[in-house]
Image 1 (cartoon, one colour):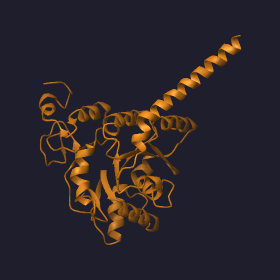
Image 2 (cartoon, one colour; image 1 turned 135 degrees about the horizontal axis):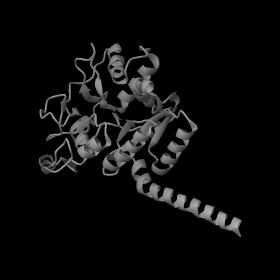
Image 3 (cartoon, helix red, strand yellow; image 1 turned 45 degrees about the vertical axis):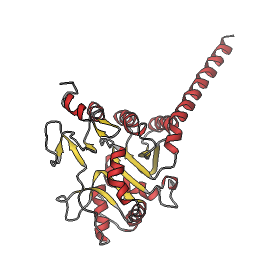
Length: 292
């Protein structure tokens, strides 16, 4: 009798888990897999903090704007069996994780080659060719993006343009220009072009990933576009629109360096469907999150 009871409990647990996964697929699967013209690839990793951040990003960016873009988190090869099991369960639930199993998941690969390796995977013959979209954005998990505003302001004007790179140029970082790594967007033909350059041009192994973009183009006598100022590093104590670091102000699109979950959620709460909400800017202290 006891054995039958245990079997019944086990079946009930498995059935409940199946229903949970089915419900998650109904909530997230359709919106994540629907055809869009824009892919946003967020670089992520395996720490508990990164897992929490993925949940926050899904709630603040993916779910509200599911019709605007296809969203994926990009990770390298798991380092342990436990990491592999956890990420499999998470991906079975949300279906928005891409594993690049041929590279290690480490700060070295993340900061140097992982984004370009992802671009090679979405070449027509690549393992992730099903993710090919008209525009490909690379971003980091400490960047908040107001998806509709970014799309209407920076992508729509280039819908019929080839070889597009959209980003904030680092003008004083190297002798060549390149788009800052917190967020840059490539037209599909430019994505393919960079992926092929990455495969054929050998660069110094320590070259960071965003500067690799500019250097690969420079070696091919090509250069990124003029500077855009939509991206900035968030600092709640600076009120200067043109500073590299400043608080969220009117017209903000892409606050960066939101290292703490509290900061990410606070900044996301300042945005509504059409961008920054003036009333929220006036009533919320960006240092504490409290109403003034």
